[in-house]
Length: 188
Image 1 (cartoon, helix red, strand yellow):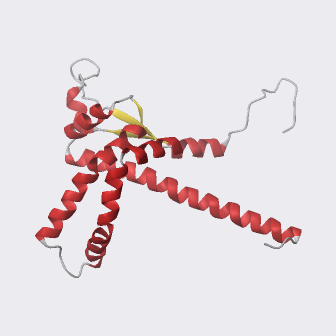
Image 2 (cartoon, helix red, strand yellow):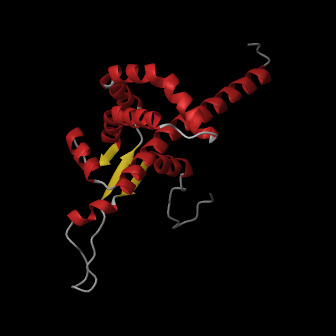
């Protein structure tokens, strides 16, 4: 950039930090809890209940380690049941035959079994407002079906996005290292 007398020394937009902030934070509106807030608006004509929002942040490594340690026994139980769950998942994907009532009950029971771990992940992901585990459980129970499924879908997306982004970055770095080794003529 050419310096001109009187020109403001403004920084150039840092796109990478902007993208990182976009991937690190997510705002979620919860319309089913709007009834708990006082209506706001101009006079009596435009009063409206405002939906509260949660600000979620992506978990860092220490948060993941805490969650893993807290739910160690639960994770062991889930790992024992993984072959059955994978078989049922492939059966659902094939659409050739429907699940029996017993299989559906098994999946619902597994969903209930994993709920404490998911709520613990949600507790660690909520950046604003700060909430305890008990408050997260109460909030989750007060949500309607649509909001609870939306919230859990966003939590799942944020956790799986981190894994896929980490994989992409790792692949880019290893490709860069291989390219540098080839340029230098170093064998592996």
